[in-house]
Length: 417
Ligand SMILES: *Cc1c(COP(=O)(O)O)cnc(C)c1O
Image 1 (cartoon, rainbow, N blue to C red):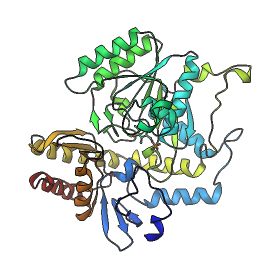
Image 2 (spheres, rainbow, N blue to C red; image 1 turned 90 degrees about the vertical axis):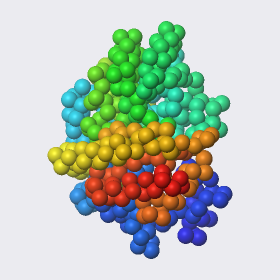
Image 3 (cartoon, rainbow, N blue to C red; image 1 turned 180 degrees about the vertical axis):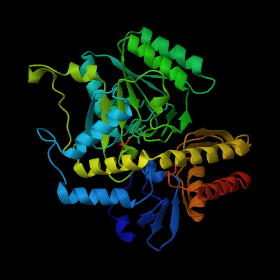
Image 4 (tube, rainbow, N blue to C red; image 1 turned 135 degrees about the vertical axis):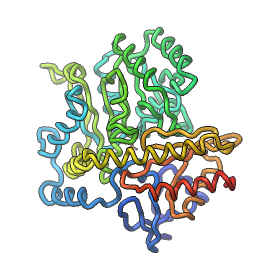
């Protein structure tokens, strides 16, 4: 542990005064095991990436086999079977409404790729439209699109301007629609980017898919390119395979990452509709080639993990598992949504979000650390966003394990942790 302290800089962590990070040496199913052998129930899928449990033997085996066959190959001028298979399967999951897959390294890069494609396809100096409270990642384009928040404050002077409106959250749908129409009436908007159905890092806040669909449709009538960031919502988190499946209008671009590989390896994928791909076709390569690529584009190990994860995801038992999680969450919600300790209790598929009633909520509110430590003492890994506690469990979690987490949550409500 002392070796870690002096050497490693951790994400989203103020090193001064931070408790030392817990060394984890092994994972199995929904559990992580510390160096001293204690189990921790991973109720947030290790930052929302894990789908089927830790160190899942089926995915591990497929990665190992791929590593012995082809670990990596340059993806400009070359391709490989895992990347082709994965592209076919991803496009098929969207009923072939998208024509091409562009691979990258993670969620932020999947968004950067989408933004660069959309900006270049528009070919004019139009502005982005996004919802307040959005989060699209930590690279510069993703930060700029996210709008201004505590996540990116030091960089505000360097971020390109974005038109930011209220999302259609419950009771604010019409206000959101009016702000949307006002934004469009400026004639400045060329791209609309959003997290469909639920905003993740902004505090696990659901919004109305019906109004969002209306906005997407209006954008399409107005020549505005729409980008759905499904980095969090993809691969069953909200119930159906993708949150976009619940929309009545089809976004032009879809960004995927996080659960794409089942939580084994970093990989991003940006799916586009044919008209965007075709807008880059030109006999003159200096004019409209898409000049973007990463060294590890379409890494074969990551693609093999993604194909293996899809095998598991598409089994009927996985859908049943997700339904079980949702119905357990709904049971909890029914009993506790009106607790005076809470201002909100939302369920969206496998996601449960509770907002604790506190004065002056903020990302760094001391309640966050108190909750982390309390759940830790119960052998549960949870990490609230400020005063918003949420569960995004791996789909292999059992109803008894969920009940153990709810019991711990109920203690925090009854004893005002
Ligand atoms: C986490 C997240 C990202 C960024 O993904 P990284 O892999 O962390 O770069 C982008 N969009 C959404 C909606 C996310 O939840």
